[in-house]
Image 1 (cartoon, one colour):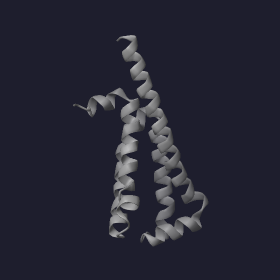
Image 2 (cartoon, helix red, strand yellow):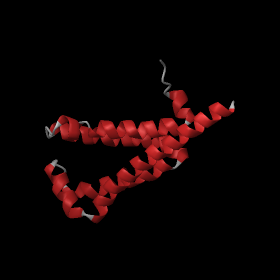
Image 3 (cartoon, one colour):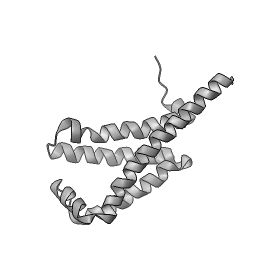
Image 4 (cartoon, helix red, strand yellow):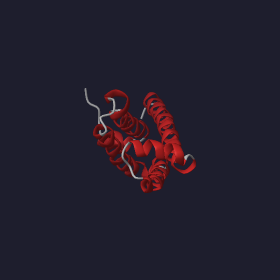
Amino acid sequence: MSDEVKSSVRKMAIAGWVVSGLVGAFLAMSAGFKFFTPDIVRETMGGLGWPAHHDLMIGVIETVCVVLYLVPQTAVLEAVLETALLGGAIATNVRMDNPLISHELFGVYLGVLVWLGLWLRDPRVRALLPLRG
């Protein structure tokens, strides 16, 4: 592998970790809300039709996902799990007839960033999901 290719791969990996770090920070913040600001969470989740007894469970799931995402050996598993979790969030927002761009599609935006960070930092994911022109 030439030095130019090595440099390009290294830059992609760095960009992938930056994207993954930002996504991980956002997901950790979301999980943290479930543990440390239960009144805000209860108001928000209640407004979406979620019973209060689900708040803690969702926070635990989000926390596990963050940890799995930042560990290279389990990141693909987390991306699959996070995609499922985001699908539920999208469905909830669609069911509540929330605004399309800011609410219903937010899970899509976040899911794309989850997979983009992983794609940039992991050559196995790039091999599995190649971009072809």
